[in-house]
Image (cartoon, rainbow, N blue to C red):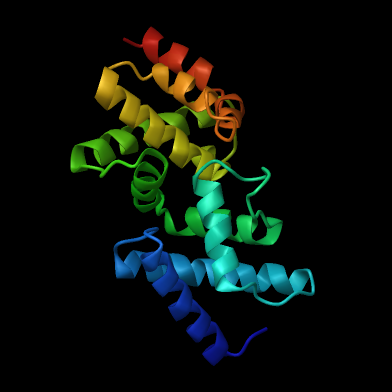
Length: 196
């Protein structure tokens, strides 16, 4: 296990990179996320007899996860880093901050407060939907996919008033189409329409 000084420097460098790469805009939230991520990375690395990964690799894996490009060619996916990132997202509940990043990165749109609120609404609906279908932990089981799905649904709803078109948007992208299946978004949309 790295000594406290090494851990603290790693956390500080990670916080800086989270900012530089636009993943976070609030220092307190970035630090909480970085600390949770580093602690999880340390536990997982020790269990596998490995050291801490380079920070640029951690950032690359995070970016791939949040762009729906995990486990695809050209995306650096590391199971230890990805597992630690999911754990850190669950621990810090930083869904909204990361949704802001997804909207900027995937859709090249500056998120408004209204769009973020709509995204939170869809994130809550996805969570309720998953829990209602027996997925233990709801969005905590698939945090990155849930964030991407909620951001997409919010954007499509804001632009067209028809959130079911989010399935078309996600399905048309070879990296994102797995989200539709994994989260059963087609069924979720049908359920939402039945409630109107």
